[in-house]
Every structure is written in structure tokens, then in C-alpha cells.
Image 1 (cartoon, rainbow, N blue to C red):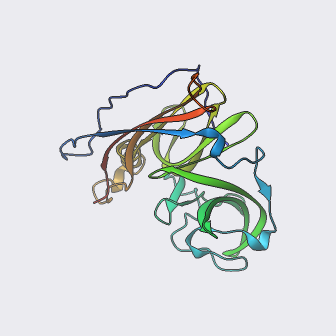
Image 2: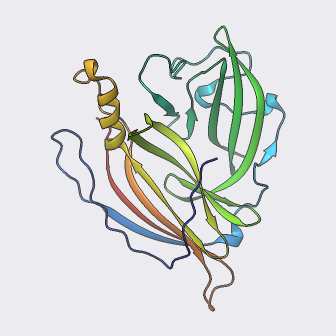
Amino acid sequence: MRSRRISALSEVAVALAVLATGSEARAEETTSRIRIDAGGLPRVGAEGWKIDPKLAVLPSGAREGGMVPASWPTTNDDGTNEHSRCVDDRRGDVQPVYGGTTYTTRIFESGGKEYLDHVTLDVKNGVVHVAEAFRTPIARVADGIWAYRTKDDVMLVAAVDEGVFDRAVFYGCSIRQFSVASPAGATMIESSASQADEVMRQMRGDQKHRLPPWVGTEMRVVASVSRSSADPGPMLRLVITRGRASSP
């Protein structure tokens, strides 16, 4: 689980210049502000509940003992450096198979509630076997953003597009978790489909003119937890700035 913490801050207004891919014109941004009682979020341990592997929910309708879905990246040995891929309308992700193992995440609804399953898979001869699975109850707090709480933090969950071309080189989309210290703390979530698209084309230079645009979102979220004298408890505040989606 990757997370970042920064010092506590009050609600922040964000202005984000949306990056454009190729010759596409810049689109207007939209900013929304959301305020939620953090005490009303589902509370779990740091890793969620370990569940019977047979109950694990996998992306793309995959099942224990079934074949690896065609939509999954099956290897990362082809030089593309795609570190993760979002599927199921950005409610699931899967990492490339490495050494016969991969990891998946799936957000799903059951009985009127939403959950997040983290699963470790063994893949042999193209067949999926669940090695370990954890389940976390979550609550939707905005379009494409979920949350839950632990003893000391509020955890945010969102699908993020990213591309890095530095000492490490990779691109992809993954369902990430970000921690906000409670009762006072803040963090930031950033998703950039245009950045993922740029790195993808740099990595696959001989094919870059034939590649379709990277499908994803441009989004920046400033999230904070704080409590004023008028609040019943710690409040989760989100300032969400969205740009265009980079789908064709």
C-alpha cells in the first residue's frame, strides 16, 4: 500500500492546468467541494479482513481455476513497462504476471454495500489460482473515489493514471490508496492520463504513431481531515478538480 502524508491544512482551493495530448485543445476544468463526517465511514484494520480464497472477487469476471482473461497484462518482459492496468470501468486493476504471481484489486457491491478485494494470484499454464485475499468495506464519497477509516487514518481509494520517465520508468493505471491522518492531516491524489500516454509512447517509440490514446482521467484531489468547534467530529474535506477524459 502506497500512501503519502503532509502536514495538516485547512480546506484548499486548487487550480489545475489540464494537460492535453497531441493536438487536442484544452478543456475547461470543473472543481467540486465535498464535506463528510469521517466518523460515518466504515472502520477496519490496516489490511482489511482475510477471507476464504474461494470468496475472492477478481477483475474481469475471472474465477478460481479459470483461464487468465485476455484483458489482463500477462507479462512485463516485453519492454513496455506497463506496471498495472485498470479494467471493469476503473473498478478493478491487475498487475503483469511476474514469476508466476500477480496481484489484483476489485471494487464491487454486495447487499447494498461496497467492498474492496485485494488478491494475490498464482498463475500456472494460464490458469488462475487464488493464493491469498483480503476484503475491506468502503464507502463511495465522490465519483470514482471511495473511503474507509482505520484507528489513526482516513483512507481514500481511487483509480489513478500515471507515467514516470526518470530513474524509474513505467506507466499504467492502478487502484491506489492514500492515507489522511485523523483527526488532522491531508494528502493529495493526482491522476494524469496525458502523462501516462506520453510515457507509453516514449517506451514504445517504434509503435507510437499506431497506438490508440491512453484511456483515463485528469484529476487532482486535495483531501484533508480536520475538526472545528462546530463539527460533531473529524470531517473529511475533498477539493476535486477534474479535466477532460482522454478516451477516444
